[in-house]
Image (cartoon, rainbow, N blue to C red; front, top):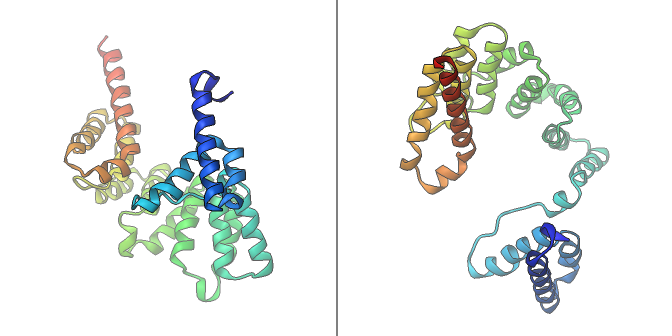
Length: 255
């Protein structure tokens, strides 16, 4: 019984029935019926977004329903595409899917084999290699690739730059790492690299400096637009958690 039973169960049944009837009347049951039956809560909510609200000018989020029902479906489809049409673009899309799914070794193999000929210095593949090598803890492999991308404008505030700075730290080049983190600072923006800089300072035992980084981040929330606050909420939440840990550690020392 959904949500532990009770009134929620009947509400879900009513919602599901409404969506199924609406779909039958519109003749879209072939697209929606199994989705509504297999995943009634998510399926019903997404049906309302895409089939009802969207028609009234409310923009529906783009969600891959197939991937929700069968997470491996996307990878299998991309594997089939590579099998039938083995192109650089198809291989990279498959590698990206492997990396997203945590199949890092498979992703690494494709990325490395793809950096040949005209694609020997492909920026996307090199940036993804940085992510894959970092996830494997191969920090010495990250650094030379990042240095090849370093002068590109898009590298300055990228995920690859953050991982480059962390790789410098984890290979005992703390001064160089801090210089990179400082390059990614900025008020009312760049919250992910600023959070990572705060974590760097915490690992270095510089709690007061880390406290200031996290506090500044949280103080800037009220000055951001709703979209900016939403897109960075994960970093605000993480910064808040770190402040709690720092505060608890300070009380322990004082006690």
